[in-house]
Length: 303
Image 1 (cartoon, rainbow, N blue to C red):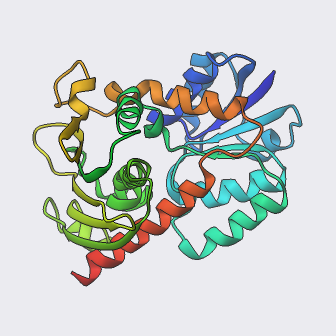
Image 2 (tube, rainbow, N blue to C red; image 1 turned 90 degrees about the horizontal axis):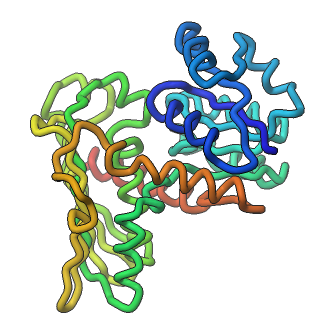
């Protein structure tokens, strides 16, 4: 039995708590959040333990797996702590907001033989898995991705990495996955359309990103946090004589209150695969996608 602890108990943390109860040979034993009310309420809900002292949980040798679902600004701190105690780690993307610290973190992960997964759960979404299978013997030439939401909360966006490292991260990774290639050119046009506070915090609410890949594939991305129509997430793949639309694999309309309706099961499948593997999962992909995010942001500042 793999005993575990979830760090960060907001929306994604709650999903992980629930999933740990369902995965064979795993158990949810501790939850931790700096918010006293939230951690006590969650511990009661899932009938597990909590502590105001995170070090106490770390020192518990029975707790092997830790899930980092806290704001991105805290990821680096928790990763360093968990590496120090040689724990198994599932970390929501991105690894860190500080690009200069990623190489040293990865070196520590590898030198300490830490088993780790970066939570690129969209790869496990039923719709996207089906789309990937349909392109197995086809050459995709153009990828179109739209992601819109109405949660224009500046501070929340900044805490989680901004428009590109928070919202864009999954989709840049998916583009590389569908393309079987990496981008060689990036052009970004971005604006803080919903509020000037985004620009003051070095962030954007809306953007269009174009990428050219090594295999000459082109990807087009449209991102927005100021949509008044609710949530929209859609991917289209084009090639000679074919078009594959993600909406053909969903039962509901493209308008959603939040992304969990479409991808709830993908969190479970990603975590389940990691727990049952004897190696790292999606670490190199997470690092590569973070580099792409940095290039996208760099292009946005230039343009």
